[in-house]
Each structure stands twice: as C-alpha cells, then as structure tokens.
Image (cartoon, rainbow, N blue to C red):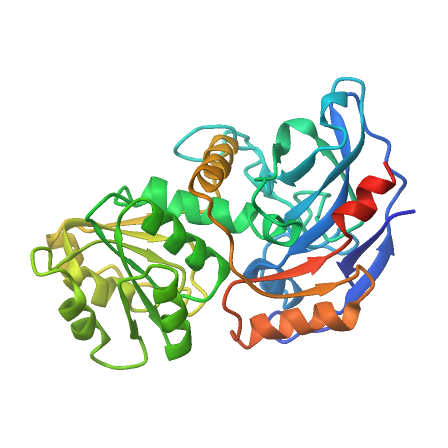
Length: 361
C-alpha cells in the first residue's frame, strides 16, 4: 500500500495547537477510465500547510495527505488516459475552476489539494490518483524538485501578477511585498520576464540582495519607518509612481501603498500573513485605487502559467529540500523554516528519484 503523510489530531485551540505529522497508508490505486496514477517524485510546502497544522485554515481534516504542490511520473492509467503513461507531470493544485476570469464555476467552490475536507487528494504521498484533465507535462528544463515547487505557487503568482494586477508590462513599476516566500519570488520572476521594473520589500537585507540577483531593480526594509520614501527615490525619474503592488502580507499596505500608486493603481492581494485586517482609506478612494483579491487560479490560467515558464525558461527558487516520504524529522525541519520565515524560495520534499520511478514502470 502506498504511504502518505497527513496530520494527526491532538487537543488544542486554533493557533495554539500544532498537529503532528502522521505516516499513513493509502488504498492501492484503482484508476477510473479518465484517471491516472502518478508516482510522486516531489512535493512542496506552502503557508496554508503550516496554517493547517496550527488549525488556522478552513475545512481542516485528518487522514487526507498534505500539500498541493507536486510532480511525478504517470505509472498507469484508465482506458481513456493511456497516452499519459510514462510522462513526467505536474498536478493542477485545485478543482472546480475551468476558465472564468471572475472565479470558480463550481457551486461548491474551489477545492485545493491537501489536508482538507474539500478535496480527498494531497501530493505528499507515494501516489496520487487523479483525473488526467488536471495534468500538465512538467517543463523539460526543470528538475523534479523544481517542478514540484511550481504548481500552487506559480498559479497564485500568475493570477495575482499577470491577470489581476494588469500591470506586468514593459516599463511599469511593480512592488512585491515580503520577498522570500515562493509566491512572491514567482511573482518577481513573472513580472521581470514581462519587462516590468520590479521592487521588493523585506525585513532581511540578504533577501533583498537575492531578489536583486533575480532581476529586481531595488528593495527596501519594511521595518524602517520611511521605507516608502526610500522606495520612491528608487523609481525611474520619468515614472515616480507605482503602477501596481502585489501583496501577500496585509497590514498597512493600503495606507502606505496608496500614496505611492498612480491614480487608478492596483493592489493585488493574495494573502495576509502579517495581518488579516486592512483598512481601506478615503485617500485611496480619492485616487481611484483598486484593491483586488486574488486566490489561486483557473485551469486555463494554470496552463498559461506553465507555458510561460517553459517559454521564458524560468525556474522556481528552491530554499531547501529533504529526501524521503518517511523522513518526518526532515519534513518537520522544513516546517520550522517556514515558521521562522528563514526560507528564500520553496521548501521541497523529494519523494523519489525520476529514474527509480521510471525503472519500475
């Protein structure tokens, strides 16, 4: 029986509890005619996985494999999906959303993989049995560890940056807050590849330096009171305002950001890791600032993102990886990195080697 990792229930209040990892057995795969069995080679963490362990995420459940990011090789398939066998693939990290720009078409909403009641699948296991329509071939220039880091992070960054902000264009000025996490870094890579002038914030000078190495024009430490003034001085002489802000932190970004944005500028928000409350001020109203929420993305946007990554030869940045589905100490260490915000890039579990998986086909 294939192994997977879920969380185990222990007593504790939301935000205080920290559910331990639990090595579980999955049923032997039996794909339906449109399904495939993917032997997973890698899976990656996102902040939602930490929130699940802290009981700070909706729909939490036990016994469902964790994680939504993953890469693997199709080992077997139902009668109508045989063409996928042997291909290296990445998984669309959620279901219920085909191509509507406004949001999921499913009346049940969008169901993200990993650790909740909304979706029985997760990528932190030896196998995933999934509808073949949810697969994209992994970009050929990516290693399996890199490919495993792409799906959820890439999709979230793609929609927030390339779709919702509307400003990932040559010559536009874009600010990306909280550089260091996987989504923020992918947003940086997408915007730079699209020709925009990208600036970042961080509380860590080393992370700002790494962002510059990836193409950022500059960065500021948000812990300094005048960070907004410092940022304005960095902007091009002929364009001294921001066109858009891509934000995953929350807090005072509307207050400070609206003063730096052009009239009609956009704040595209994909998360609120610092503060779940964000006042919308009259000063922002008077400048016609738009605040747009952005969560994950559609199946079409997932395909568009993968195509762009392939065309532009982009690579997710890997902060650290560990090996083995049963390496609970190593996997717990990755969660500690996320807790401490010490990572720059993605945290990945290498479940198996590509060659080992293919040799068993």
